[in-house]
Image (cartoon, rainbow, N blue to C red; front, top):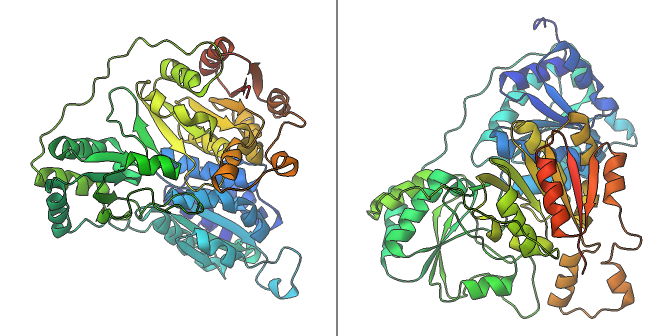
Length: 520
């Protein structure tokens, strides 16, 4: 490419590549055609087509969680961004680095109020750590470099770059050099000393962990702290990524339901936050506390999400004089898969026994999967990804992005059927890209989580209300849905069938879907 005579789109692609962003999840339209055309003239960018913007944004989230660097998105104007906002919300809650590129009306066309004209920047800002609209071709490259820097600044976030179509097709583009990363701040020494004092007090204390505090080096430090002080360890309820399985330090999660969480934390006097805001229950319930811990507990902050969590935990362990601990045993255990009727515990037992080595598990199992996480602590080493922002429909896109990031690893998507329908188009992209993904659809044919919530908020029910929570009339046929998008699939009605299909799918290249029929 002749860098002395390029347009804005070409400068964008080359700058992204120079900054290490070499993957783009895209659903382009007219305003983005010059970006698409630039891909042929500027080699090196892998583009993955998604048939819906929620797939695109969720896949960028899953990619970055595994790759440790951002992907780009390519969305079509404000309405395309709006279609992708739910999974950008999830990515924001996961502190995922994403370079979110949104096309827009040409600068001189906006005054005509054409049908796609929208407040694109206004829609992007609530989910973004950085938002900018380029107004001339010469500024596109420098804006792209700034977007990458902003997305990668701890703890990570969405940088939204809005590009009117004329700044992409106009000549005068300039490739920008990568900007130096912004250092991650360290926790003040006095804070470490203060937290050591709390832990030495003998009062029941909880260390609540999130983000990079769930990486293995950081977890090793937290286990040192717990061994020296009897502190309790829990992660937040939904986490971007947890490395777990045999040979790795484990951590249990804070229960989702408020009553269960408060029962679990009864008697806790101090809560020390590591990489997480003050926790709250997912929803308000009549007459119940919004906090999942005792009302009289004192909340302390060891490290905020944007600070160096691993360093803070290591220094705290040293301040306490906590001895080093040996790594957990990694000897494989002779595990039998689940049998008999399909239950959450039985499926968890099969996952524990049959999960492939170094797999990536994407968990959007919602209600039925309550046994999956605690029941797989002895499985082969793996990474566990969750939907972090509560916006359902992220599981299949996360799996798509994770598989692009790690082509040498099997991805297992544990997917509730109702939320799977939000972004079922991800199956098509998996087939198109020939990705090694095993999708397990938990087909209970209802929004079971909402049935629980209906009772929790004290709402009275009748036929009309219950019909809104039932997706079994007519039954979804996930085998046909998958086949229609190019994915091989089969149905399992008992654990023996599931075990056979799961082992087969994980040993076969390409995507495979198992519809696990759950009888309620």
